[in-house]
Length: 84
Image (cartoon, rainbow, N blue to C red):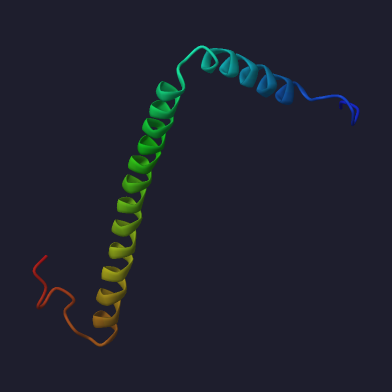
């Protein structure tokens, strides 16, 4: 285990990666860096939107199952009156 003052291999790798990224971004015009940053954010927002859609479908499935179980508990046919 590294001593407290020593950096872990992971930290050293992260530091190296940051230095490499900095040296690349230093050579790119600020406007391009801003555009790339905004494009990266949009990609994250798109993924977030997809995940929210998955979560909504899960919630809808849970609600449908609860409703069906409530009807079954009352002795009703859970398929009566549903369009699905």
